[in-house]
Image 1 (cartoon, rainbow, N blue to C red):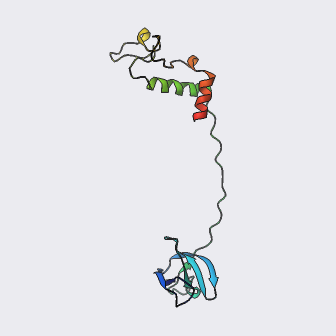
Image 2 (cartoon, helix red, strand yellow):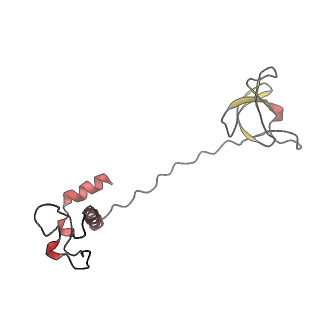
Image 3 (tube, rainbow, N blue to C red):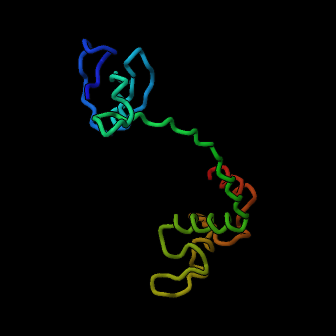
Length: 147
């Protein structure tokens, strides 16, 4: 079926529409209907009598207008507890340490407990967060603002 640039047989054919293709009817002008192609989004004109199913003839079916979908906001995510945030901060801090002995309770590559050899136990240099008591309220607020 001819998909034309304007509402007359004198207007150029810009495409052909396949039988059974569902199009969106936008406007009418006399015996012509302006429709939107469902795939390309292109707008053009077809002879109105060729729209809609009728005795199996070669027709294009107008698409039914879509019902508006109500916008539903998802429920807010529950706020993380201070303990969960502290554990995440500790994990981030330990992951940022390049060696194997960030905290006293870690084990070195030989399987020995780090203890006093850990970065946490040595003054200067790296200062990883190893215990929940090391996490301050400011750290928790900063984490919440980032996430």
